[in-house]
Length: 257
Image (tube, rainbow, N blue to C red):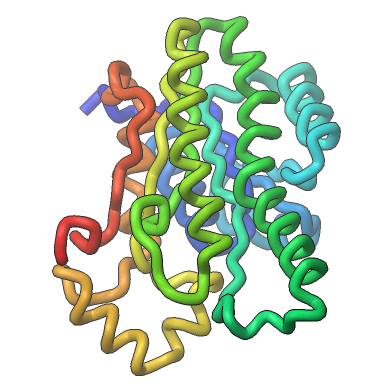
């Protein structure tokens, strides 16, 4: 079991104030890692840090390249190495494409895409590159990007989100191809449908839950704790020759018709 022991490692988890990010922070801490939680809202972040024994907070906006670089460089210089990065920060937008008002289409679409692109894709690059530069110098590092079941599939009403999560999957491959020779393993976890604040509207919708239970072979919503094992695996020595992969944790939904 030593292959999965993260004692002596430090992990930075973005978007860790709630939901999947907070659950992964707890799980990595239980596996022995010293965890650093990131979020934009310092107040919410402080509350989350208090829930994880021994955790630190590092507040910065992952969509701001300069802020991410400054925060990571400063932390490395003042505190120590970030051995594991979990790029979890993300956002969602739901609405039928056909309902965009024609007159406002361009403005709405540009604003929406800008927000989604910055939060779901640019943040992965921003924090990933900032951490990778230090990892490359040390010849070792783990980067875990949080993709989605929508990396492989699509569902009505979330086309822009689906596009961004598809990009996360391919950016993960690009990171692996460029950085594997420097000793980094870059992979992604693609959650299926999990009961999180991001999915609160869907969880509260009986008709959607009924559809999901029929569509998913496991017959239920996922629990955020069920992502921890995959994260510990990808963060540990157990995955030393795993690179550029997207691990679906989805109750079998991508395996079924």
